[in-house]
Length: 363
Image (cartoon, rainbow, N blue to C red; front, top):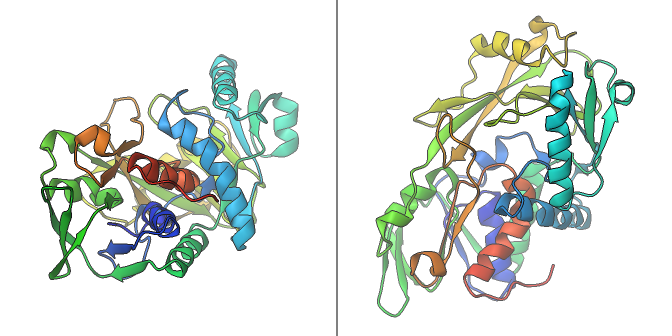
């Protein structure tokens, strides 16, 4: 198992509960240091994703599973609801389209609302109409990872921190040899859940054809926090364009308000937030939050999203490659696992086991 982010830990837990001996290789000194912990910590309902896509199916399945898991394991979660707002009448058609797509995806509690109800829910928001999603919420990403790791270890899994994957070789008969941390081991199953480094890991597997390793691009997203009392009690999103959900209002479990993420295509991992991006944030939210004082914005955090598409291209689906896709027994590679990966983590883990021909344990 390569990678101890939320996806790697969820897969490790599933494999261990299925009776497999599991070793999780993680290059960092603690789990979940990248995409898993540098995001909005939103529990997504599954509104936007194309019907039949992995993102749509695994988000809806995963949300139900994750809500139960958080409640069972005492992980903090608040389904405080989300408003998707149209600020111009010409955006109503887009709202209606997203509403229809959400219903088709199995999100059956969303409804279209008018300006008065938007204002009643969020008095500071300007909108002519909205889409209300009561199942959307926020959660403790670190708490989920701690619980997944504890469950995996309770079933015999081992976490090897500070052990970077180096290379692997596919042997005749289906066995794989993996080198990491100056040593090697043999295994019958190898799961590449390395997130930002997943294509790099896959490219170092001798015996995996290069055409099965996609080019991955890095999209940085910065966040700014709002100083002062919280002006919101729900998540607020603008109507999305074709490439992004837009800079939105999110809250953390302490009630602190953040705006983000924006988009910045990068060629390296760098989590510094440029204070000079603040004016662009203020302009981006002015349509639906005209009362924002730009001076109240302060740099907060940033994350990097693993993308399988480039600038100007439509968003790509998750890619989960099993033996049926690339012909290597026991190998599963996960690429482009961005949002809603956190929400979908338990469903993704189940999907990985299915593609490896392993019976998933009941939740």
